[in-house]
Amino acid sequence: MTLDDFPCLLPQAAVGGHRVRVVHALRPAQLPHLADLAGGRAVAFATDMGFGAKYGEVLLLPGDQGVESALLGLGDGRDDGGCDPFVFGALPPRLPAGAWRVQAPADVGAGDIVLGFCLGAYRMPAFGRARSSDSDAPRLVVTEQAVASAEVAACICQGRDLINTPPNLMGPMDLADAARLTLSAQGADVKVITGEELRRDYPTVAHVGMGSDRPPCVVVAQWRGSGADVNAPLLSLAGKGVCFDTGGYDIKPASSMLRMKKDMGGAALMLSLARLVMLRDLPLRLELRLGCVENSVSGHAMRPSDVIVTRSGQTVEVGNTDAEGRLVLCDLLSAACDSGPDLLIDAATLTGAARVALGPDLPALFCNDDAVAVHLLAAGDMCADPMWRLPLWNGYREWLRSPVADMNNISSRPMAGAVTAALFLQNFVKTGVRWAHIDTYGWNDSARHGRPEGGENLCLRATYEGILKIFDFGGRKGD
Image 1: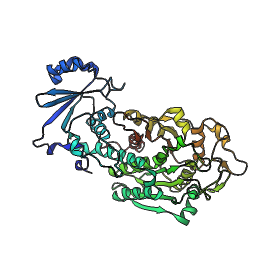
Image 2: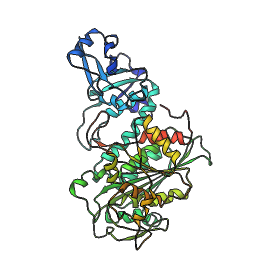
Image 3: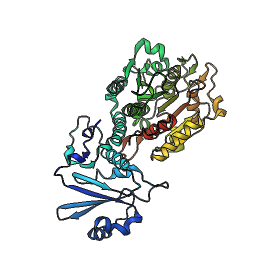
């Protein structure tokens, strides 16, 4: 990718005769020094307008030719210094068109500015509607080094696009085609498994998809970095790609179904993560599996009390057809373990219980390896993309017992739903495989700076940075 791929960015080399205006980013403690930054007129105007440098506060400063410059409040910052990159997402909706440069405190990274600006410039795909020209938008002047942060933003925004796509335009094969296009462009070998081969190798995915006229499929991709040999670490990723979830015969109420186009958010996250790994050419081997399926109601849909023989040979009783995500994932995990990965990560919009426990902004992390969990959590804290660890509590494993199968897909108790879902998945992870499961929301309920309402790629940056630490790929961050 190059800077030309990002309309909201203007390479320094292309500034030419453009008038470049400045955004002064500052914290409340710097207000007494505002005159040194922006001049005395700015102080008087900011005082009259009540500017307090609060988080995301933007003030346009007038001059003889209209808006002369701008102020951006950073708030009080994080406890560890620096700032939340999303604060720079407040700028694109507020700045007039033209070229802009941000001047920020020394402890604010240039990469955070670029990332936040790009995420704030995101606009939902038009889906046939007319759209204003990009020439009406402000552009951030950057150096060539900014392409690394712009790549991260592009991967996040691709996931947003996939989640935001209406379900009539994003069926199982549409998701698979999008994945194939993305992965093939980076040199991956991609196979889409359907029909009899799917029923044989991924029977739980096939069973979940029986009710839809849009047949299910599984995307399997393999890739190896240019610096990786056959003995390089193997990273395996798996994502739940339920393109629309009615709940099946255990049908959801209408209010709960309104956002179910986001139920492929786990697949969007894992696809975006795989793309970022490939763009950065990490020295590892990569496998990706996406279960692309629709959970519908029909005369041939799966039923409560069905018993499925999974890929691993274990049997599962369907206690609830609305707990289909774990059925989609369990065969993907079994297949991934067959390759003996050094690290296995899956992601899914899996349980409402995780949202009750942690809310929409904190994906739940379950992990069978403490060192892996520490790296992922620390990475999330470092880059303001947090997760929160919940336990794989063996005491609740008995709640998944079934009188007619090896296990039920739901718990016999109305508690700890996120934990029991993760315990169900753990049954399909081979002993000795380091595994992390991310239960994410994949959605912004309302617009905030850098985070528009709609689909969201939560913890993409945290997971990527965690992988660098887990495999000790120091110096390969790229931003």
